[in-house]
Length: 130
Image 1: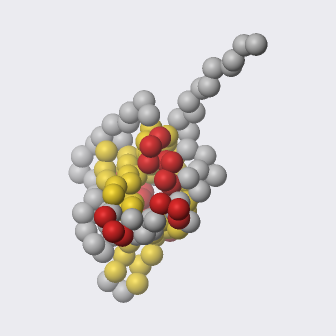
Image 2: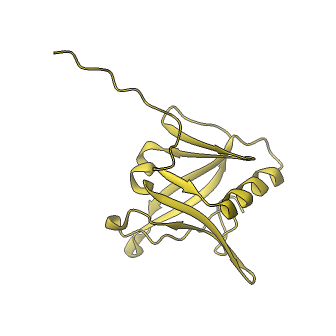
């Protein structure tokens, strides 16, 4: 019995991560405003202590062989295969209420205690690529 080789598909599929129109527009604006030549925006997951995991974004100037990529109108998102394990099925949205604006990760992998908040691009908490 022969085993077929498993191929890594670098394209991020809608069932893995989706981006709302509001988030897509904001991502495109962030990349257009960048003074440096960027390959795109990287989504990352980091330990958040007692609050669970933290989801964020930062500019990146390169991709890696382990990245999955989502290309949209004016933006490019990268997420590595480890972070994708925690993000699978999430929706990235952008919300603005008064002076507060942030990306929100909806439907994150709840079993790992994720907060669904992003302190990255355009987030009210600062940091990332804002």
